[in-house]
Length: 367
Image 1 (cartoon, rainbow, N blue to C red):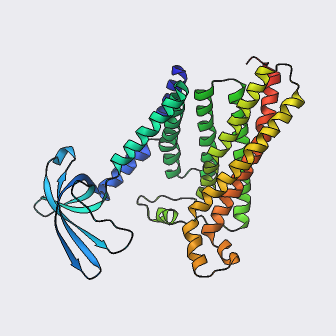
Image 2 (image 1 turned 60 degrees about the vertical axis):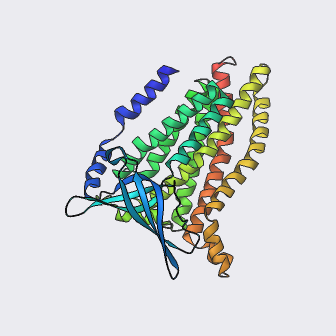
Image 3 (image 1 turned 135 degrees about the vertical axis):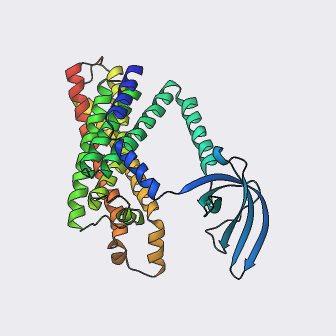
């Protein structure tokens, strides 16, 4: 297992196009934002002018190069739900600039969320290890390597202008292989799951591509995608391709869950009943798949609906009809995501089952 993990890590760092991050570093010198973490020592004053309140804060910098440096910053709040007044002990982020004399001048930038998220991730990892033991450690390792695969392979290659659809499929397949090999070994359970996930993602991706083009999706419905047009460095993106790539990546988790559940169940069935015939295995696989399919489709639909809930509420509040809501690209994108992802999940079921039966016959019951 250690050799397998080491080989994957070597692949990630040996072949990942990290030079893109070097390019980003050079760009950062031109568009640099110097951020510093700080703690609020005291709320020195609060100035109320009409509908706004300005807090005068005395803060202490926590970063190593300026640790202990105290300064005064202002935090202007509007009377709405988007802002919260700061209190003594709160952690914040400051933006630092230098004046003509080279003296650092600080401005309030935002709230420091690193500590609560670090505690949350530590609690998550502890729960996984406590419940799963060694398998939990393997699951966390697979998760870490998948994140590395995205950050050091997918993102740099997308910035270089490679085809986002092809890249997303390749990264998803590699992620599936990494997860299955680390967590479940190299037996027929893993191979059938990899084949099922790959087939489901390919079919879901093709469906998303065909119907996305038919529906004239531009891929610019969300603000983040629109901001990519203003990214410094002259990057050129295929926004429609990024949309379809996001759909494929978004469906990976559900497809992997379904494929692993089916292959694991069939592995147990064949282990406890070595004389089971292919028809019985296939029938059992489809019965299991039908049960899983109902819950997982709901999971996908509800997840994507939740992502568009605010938009739906806006147009429903203005009395817009269903036809007007569904013709919005931001809503149409979520519909396409949920339906294409669900179809990929559905097709992953039979592909996993037949792949397992084929490997079971080819390799034998004891592998």
